[in-house]
Length: 196
Image (cartoon, rainbow, N blue to C red; front, side, top):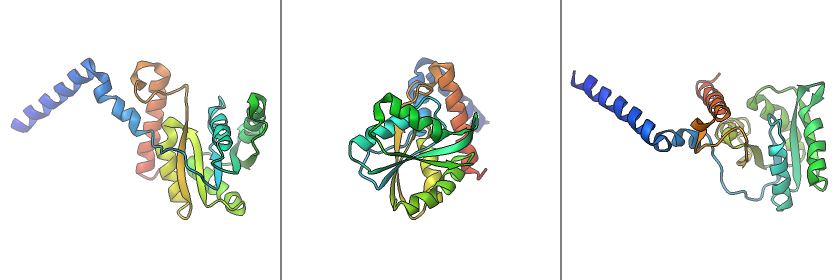
């Protein structure tokens, strides 16, 4: 009986704290999804697919301009009006002022971060990449980093977060799009933990 009482007290305390100070209880759940370190030099940069607004590829262009890597690869799963994503992303980046960046596409058939890493690996090895700066959306960095380190055990992987209009880790509960991104990414994170 005492255990049930303490459990009820904890639940009520959590609900009241969340109501009065949501940043205290909810923000850590959003921040957990973001796992980055300051960019350091690497052999190559890889832009992961899945960004229809171009924020990832533009962030990669900025990293390249800082001299942190000499090669920039763009993942290119198929499926966008018979184009691969790299076929659309690279011209977009060039139109946005990154014509000086030597983007190179890696067309593939991947439909997950794990298969994306698996299918990109032969090309990355062929190009001499032993350390990698991986650019993806902020909310995707922890899961993508974990997945790619498992797929590339002999490669040094560092994550770089591109800004995302669809997520704010400190206020994810304040806008519907942030909430949707939070839910989807946490669902994928749980699936990743149990091996799905």
